[in-house]
Image 1: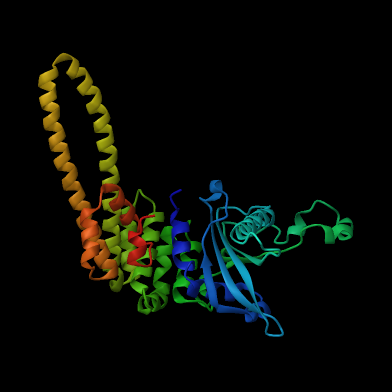
Image 2: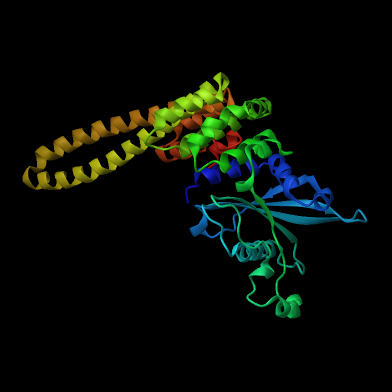
Length: 373
């Protein structure tokens, strides 16, 4: 499934342990956070959400070392679920239990001889129009009076998740969080995602944070992802108006980044239109060819051959255009390219070019862009 803009920005940012660690420290109880060795935080592969919920949920799983009071070392899993929908799911604690079971099942598949399970610390990052309104403890979902539930409490699952409801956070509070500059900026963007015009209007108050992001390692690429996110969630009926406001609010340093991304998005739209047009043209061409073929075989055969020759030439011309565009984007993002990379792009077919182009702004390294899968 194609990731949503929210999913792409969330994962591109918080899959990096530096940003995830700062975000987790912010919301975990201080006594617990003090025991976790965030320098050991490592991203684990996999997603555990239901495919039908992928449009409104994103998840990341990390491992880390945790220290006991006796300074004994153990491992813990931290599961970060981002919920970006307009309402609160009343059974989120149950949904999390399902995901945790899937994580344990995955662990046992990798470690079939294991006799114990790793601890999982679930954290939910939420933003909605109304803010969080549901239970955060699984036992609060059990349909029993409190005194009856107390009698069976030790026989039913019992856990609660850590909730970070950014719906209730003011801009000032988000800006003051003890997180990386990029982490704060991304949370703020997600917080106002449903109102991109308002987001752009408030961007000038984040000038110092934007500058801090730009000065950090990989800051230019990170900001490109943020600008792309804002342009992606904007009202498609008013792209020029929002682009002008974004350029005004983001400041002169961001102009080249934003214009490059806007050009890229327009190019992607043009290529998508061309693909649809070619497919429609091919279908119509086949039907017309069959009709004409029955009436004038040799004549139409010659004409069809000429058309195919022209189409083949046009296709190759479009491929060269795509290759040049991709090389330009890669140089803007990663600097001068190795000769072997240029050769790979020059030899790539349409499917690879499309896949690599889609990854340019969301992948942290050149190797990630050009991976085969």
